[in-house]
Length: 196
Image 1 (tube, rainbow, N blue to C red):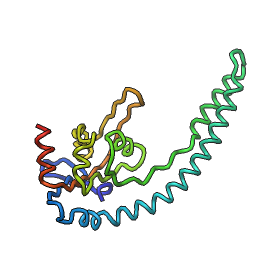
Image 2 (tube, rainbow, N blue to C red):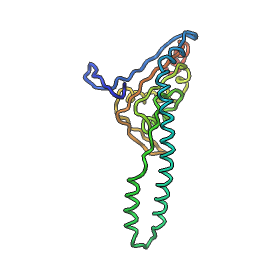
Image 3 (spheres, rainbow, N blue to C red):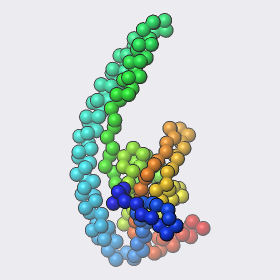
Image 4 (cartoon, helix red, strand yellow):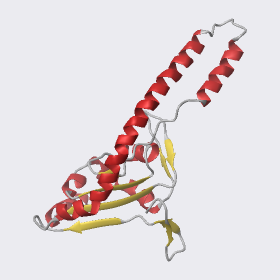
């Protein structure tokens, strides 16, 4: 739903209906059972879509191999003093515009992830995701929490510029993130103590 609907908040800002939720419960209070009830259908749909995606990915890889072969063949015809280089350049430009489009993975649920993987998924896969776990300790000890400020634009629906030193930078538009962490009180307290 978060990828379809927006809501107007009292400050008149329009934003996504994304949620940030934390369930605090002791061991044995059925956090995993509740998580399975809540997430079971979403996981089932994601699994079905994964099979379709894998087939599409195989087709894409074959199309990409053919595309690369065509490109390599054209590049071999280029020489330093060949008058036909301009025509070959135009053919290469036309070929680059026909490059196959990689299918988007149907990744909706992120549990054990890094900030980089989450941002990459929002860029290359689906722009509407869920991040959470019935084992909050897993999330609180992960590197993703060291960059928790990244969650603000994801949650609010704002655009986000991601600058990288060793790979191309990119911009995320109209992204949506809901989050649900289930955690024991002691684990949460330890995380809060370390955050101060």
